[in-house]
Image (cartoon, rainbow over all chains, first blue to last red):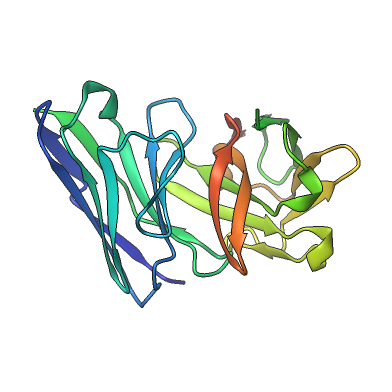
Length: 107
Length: 123
């Protein structure tokens, strides 16, 4: 299976900060990468698909980039509602895999 | 509005069975592939199983950790997906989510999720 390595595992930031989360694939996944946000006790919510496409209804402060093996999720101007855990996912085939998650906390 | 609602979770002893249901509404169920995912307490997300549409042969796939013990199925007439879980182990304890998939060929991501159902395997 393709391994997805996410960093950092925890991130402390202030409201208004620009936040960057990185995901590295163990082999090329082209642009078959999605990013999800999960709040405690809730199901994951899709933010980004195909590495850089913003899901409908997701605020434009969220953006994704990358291809091949290196991917980035950026949150421009962090808001209190953005405090959550974020997961990357590769979906080159239906046998998808997730990164271990990045918890975004307030500094 | 697209909705997926899981049910059937609960406390079960090791070695026993449980069947989860995913009742859906708001979309043409038969036109979409589906997956089950799970999340152990305090842990990350794990893909469990997948099923294509009947048009694509109803092909199924399973994570190695559940292969041979879990079976995914779908009833397109009732808009429900199922996950039959046999020979349950303590390590199967998790919240189980079903998801509608958007696919480009075999590459599928999850725009819609249910709220999850908790399965606890313990003696």
